[in-house]
Image (cartoon, rainbow, N blue to C red; front, side, top):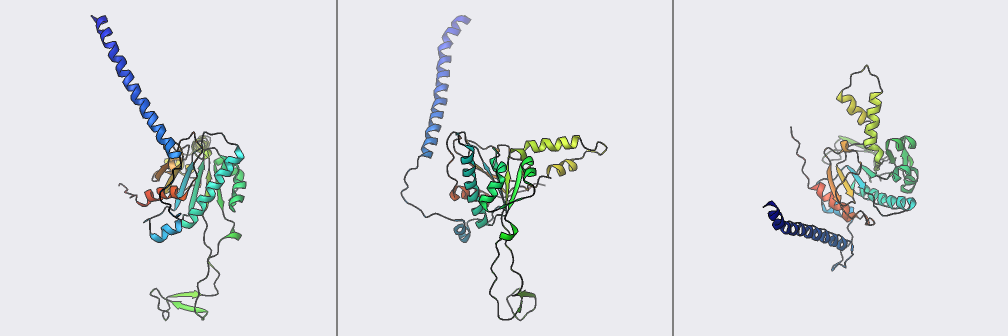
Length: 303
């Protein structure tokens, strides 16, 4: 009886398996067609003028903007020489730095899993007109190199045109006869702070955590280990928590080794593309989608 049942149900089992295989194959084929179609530059019916960050700021597009923007540049599987890869990443970094300056973003952290930006930090800083802060070798060991504009090249804010008097009394309501605040025409010009650029590699993630654990294990055994001590050693890496994490590339959202303990309250946006293709150009329109997500996000903290 069991043999007869098996012979009768065997074709049914084959039919079910064939149907499931056909469904999965069709879904994969449809997904591949959609990906390939997204890579083809179809002509647009109407050409729009390029939008700049200044235009969006004038129109009041966002209620808030991130003070600290972190960007993960997902590596592609396509083969490319090291020099060309560094040049491509520097060009992406140059664009991000320009947009950050226009938007008033104070800190820009760029994570490169391959470590090329950190290894070539001196060349990258020269190409961007910035300087390496601190010891270059120490930064490479911990996976974090900080770039800043040299003090001699800081942008000087233009002085406002004042009245003929050397000292003019100005109040909060604009009454020049009041003596609430003094503005000196001969005072030194103010200096506008520039964007701080953090170059990150995989060494700033789990390897840094392992290094902290090793230092704590081989340290003073007479001291009691506390959670505050562990947190203090982990936070010794000068990397503040980003407000927005922009992941550029990859088929799905991955951190690629980015320090996870620094993104507890970070908003994330993922711009995907197939990892087996050459990365598409990083445009402001792509970054603006992430800024739109952050601008409309509501932070609700529990007790």
